[in-house]
Image (tube, rainbow, N blue to C red; front, side, top):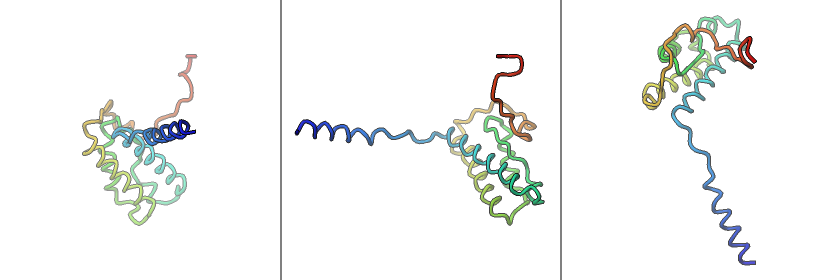
Amino acid sequence: MMPWTSLLLLLLAGLPAARPAPPTCYSRMLTLSREITSEFQGLQAAEPGEPCVRYLPGLHLDIHNYCVLAKLRDFVASPHCWKMAQVDALKDKVRKLYTIMNSFCRRDLVFLSDDCSALEHPIPVTTGPPEGQS
């Protein structure tokens, strides 16, 4: 019976080592940008008639576009909706993403584009191959 007990103890001792890796700077930026975009779209859907929400700068974020830094700054500096708790919480997340991108993870960031107009509209989601291809 003793060998089984020691085998069980060995197996249990190895389980804590199987933890997931901590998030990287890049994964944190990507996750936060997706959360912000999703929350902004939800805010627009929930409050379409609210005048302040209509005048907020759009938030369709792509962390690989150099213009995203200016977009984040503009959103935080926007005077609209300063009394809405949902917008304040969203601005806090935007401020956090800007800080992460501009200080902590600056070296990990690779900008693939500087097309500012691409950030004005949501990126279309494709579910299959382009037309004419299969």
